[in-house]
Image (cartoon, rainbow, N blue to C red; front, top):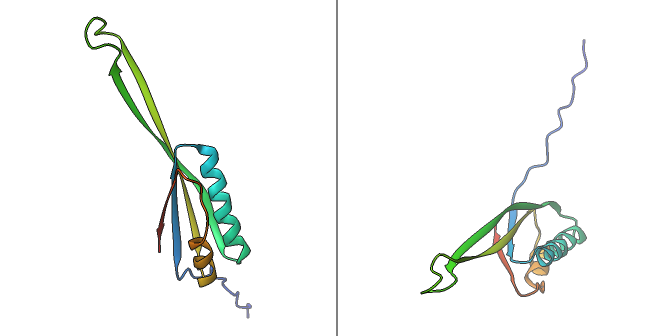
Amino acid sequence: MPAKKKTEKAPEVKAKLRIKLKAYDHKVIDNSSRQIVDIAARYGAEVLGPVPLPTEILKITVNRSSFVHKDAREQFEMRIHKRLIDILNPNSEILEALRDINLPSGVDITVKI
């Protein structure tokens, strides 16, 4: 009679904390995401990310002159860098630590539970 094999199940994910970061400077957003991952690792939570999302590029074209050099144009662009971090099964200590985190100005953070 063959022995029964135990089937291992992946640990169930009860709750997931999804953090989305946006910034114009990629160095600032990388440092901020590293801070968040360090806080989650300190309290023993499983972290997925930071996942770099596609950079949003906004291009603006304006006339160089309004009258004489009408055909001359200038182009400007603004790059918005994005990162996604998932924290699986967060506890109240992690939430409290993330609430007290001091991120630099220019970083937009969105948290979904």
